[in-house]
Amino acid sequence: MPDPCATHAADQAPQGVRARARAQLLADVSRIAREHLAESGAPGLSVRAIARELGLASSALYRYYPSRDALLTQLIVESYNELGDAVETAEAACDRADIAGRYRALAHATRSWARANPNEYALIYGSPVPGYAAPQDTVDPATRVVTVLGDILADISPDGLPLRLAEQMPASLQAQLDAIPTPLGGDFDREVLLLGVTVWAKLFGMVNFELFGTFNTVFDDADALFAASIDLDLAALGVT
Amino acid sequence: MPDPCATHAADQAPQGVRARARAQLLADVSRIAREHLAESGAPGLSVRAIARELGLASSALYRYYPSRDALLTQLIVESYNELGDAVETAEAACDRADIAGRYRALAHATRSWARANPNEYALIYGSPVPGYAAPQDTVDPATRVVTVLGDILADISPDGLPLRLAEQMPASLQAQLDAIPTPLGGDFDREVLLLGVTVWAKLFGMVNFELFGTFNTVFDDADALFAASIDLDLAALGVT
DNA sequence: TCACAAACAAGAGCACTGCTCTTGCTTTTC
DNA sequence: GAAAAGCAAGAGCAGTGCTCTTGTTTGTGA
Image (cartoon, rainbow over all chains, first blue to last red):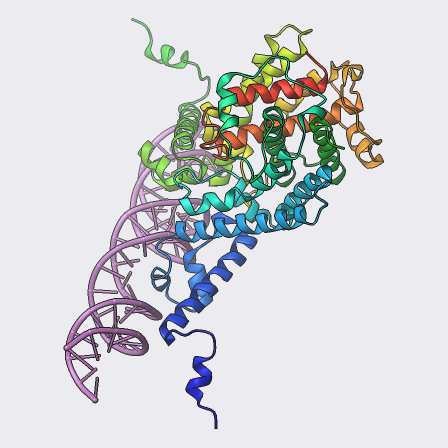
């Protein structure tokens, strides 16, 4: 006859029942919070509603999350990481030499994730709550997409740029661009980087307009528009 | 001795005291709501707080606005119109032949207004509230900026375009572009219009990134970056 | 093994929100 | 002048984030 204590202890958690219950509840709260975010958006996220769904008193949740903002912060981090995963996976599947393909993968993965998770996207790329200050934990996950873009930009030669700035860029802008950390073993051309930064903003501007309804009634289906926009940007970057 | 009733009646309102009081209160509510929006952002807008500042019971305000959403709708319309005024004024001050100058005026006016009124900007170009459906009154004011852009695009010749799409654009996209109403007495080139639409999204993507903090710590001062982005777009449009 | 400390769940409560309904008063209109 | 419409105030409902107290359960050191 097997020892029930042994099987119990072999479950997964070496710690006591209390620590195991805590981990379980944290996971449950996170799961339900994500569901509520997906359904009702960030403004509709309610600590009391989550407690209700868990059959708990709302005050009990405050032993796990110090505030609603802390819950939101975790959702922000998770959303950044989900988008980062999607973009990194899509880009990594491309031939390294196919620079245009890599950027297309990045852009389409971004748009696809945003369309599949509009409330999560709005949480991280929409208007921030005036009082809310993003904690330090959110900045690393937030840079994952632009890091992939940086890798691509570092592989683009300035020789192919079809358009050059009429005048040299001001020293302040040069300094800002030069201060951007380069990928491991790579390096940026300053003009490519400048164009890349603006293309980055354009990508999210396009997704914003589509998701937030600015394109409504004019581009109800934005597939072709989005693809054409990418093609134009790749042409400006001089990559086929 | 002048008749006090006469001077009173000559004030401005030909209607009775009740209609005049109503107009005054509507104006007061609107003013205070704008102040609260500017200070606390849209999520912080509270009907009760406005009533408190007016020395009224909160229930009294519901004779003037059917709901908080109606108040927000008015603020949205006013914000669109303020931005529209700023952009139209700036663009109208330019020499008609100076196409680059006209677009620069549009772009800088947009950014300036957004920086001066971040909460109003976030209200109209940030993430929409999931439940809120924009009423019909908001769509006309919302198109004012892009209408000015359309006027500019109609004056751009496709002959100057330095970059062309590698392949013809799909028929669906052509149809969407052709359905866009043209300015009075003007006409669009399809490729110019396509590029213009993406430049439109890029403009607001840049402002979003700057205002919502995505550029933080990298481009704390985005003046030069923004100007360079405009120059790049003008080069892509083939206008000096 | 036992006592003590820490962790925990529940409930009441506070201050706030949007919104509704009733009550009494004032202005307009017929 | 009377009826009707417009209006302000207050109470009240259902909801929110969050705190504090109370009683219970679990982990830990003597």
